[in-house]
Length: 233
Image (tube, rainbow, N blue to C red; front, top):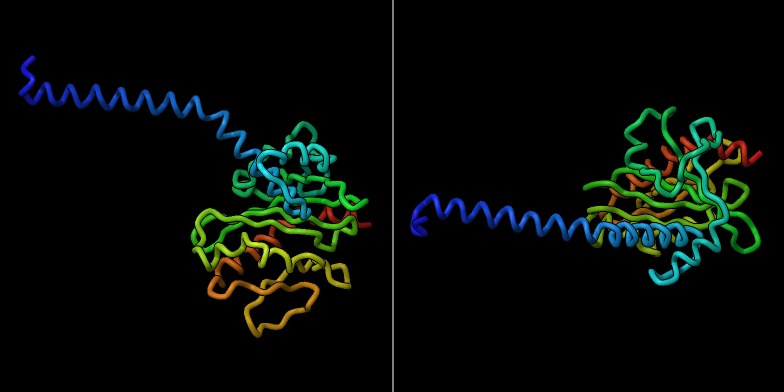
């Protein structure tokens, strides 16, 4: 074949594209188990962080197995759904379903001599998904800890939801009012009034992300409402 011909150039380019694609696919397949493990370890770190337990990639799995004493899935009625895996339940997928069809993961953690209930959350910020874990004391009302994260919020603004400065004020706040109504947590702007036990300060310049997180909390705790009631009373 004439190496200076157009047909040779096209054939050569096609072969190189196929070879490169095959190599990349092989590498991707080979790395998939490691990527999944890294994802799982990070998720365990975030769950532990919601109950104020610091961990590293090296010790997260051990701490998780020691501290998380139970995990299960419930439905909108607060009933345990048998045969489902709480850890692998994809909240993004569940959010796309009708509320009555959703699977709602629950994690139980033994810490400081009492049981804490950890609830995964999923919502929308300014630029994309936001998510997190909130732990309640066994009164099913008082927040014991919180951990939030995001996909693409603005650094220095909405991305601040994943910092301890934002997360720490959630500790001790209550999601039910004195009449037993679920009010969740209000993320307030400077000067905005709200009952102290139900509010945290929002992020300056990150109002849309803050309000997205507020909506996420109310929407998802509403999904868990029947479960919370059963455990509370």
